[in-house]
Length: 155
Image 1 (cartoon, rainbow, N blue to C red):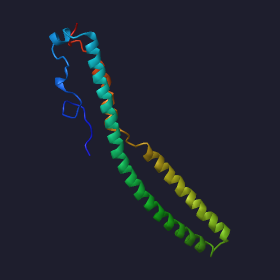
Image 2 (image 1 turned 120 degrees about the vertical axis):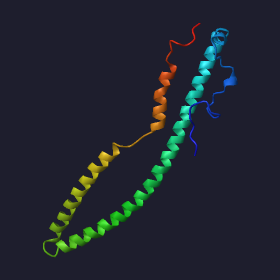
Image 3 (image 1 turned 135 degrees about the vertical axis):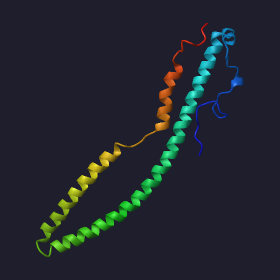
C-alpha cells in the first residue's frame, strides 16, 4: 500500500504550472484576491493530504491490530481452557487433604493474585500504544509552514 506524502511529487497535489507566482515581479503583479485564492487552495490541498495520510495510516495499523487481536483471542481461549482444567485438577487434589470448600477458596485466591499481576502488566503495556505517529509529525509541521518569513517577498 502506498501512503500519501507531502512534497513536489506527481501525487502531491502541487503543480507549478497551476499559476502560482514564484518571483517578486509575479507577486507584485497579482491581486490580493488572487494571492488569497492561492493560499486558500494550498491550505485546502494540505488539509486533504493530511486527512488521506491519517486514513492510510489508520487502515495500515488497523489491519495489524486486527490480526494480532484475533491471534491473541485464540491463544487466550486456549490458555483459558488449560487454566480451567488445571484449576479443577488442583481443586480435586487439595480436596483429598482438606475440605472441598477450603480447596476451592485456595484456588480462587491463587487466581485473584494472577489476575492482579496480569492487570498491572496490561496497564503498563497500554501506556506504550503508538498512535498515529506519521500523521502527528506531519501536522506538527503545519504551523511552521504558515509562519511569515522575513526574507520573503513583501508588497
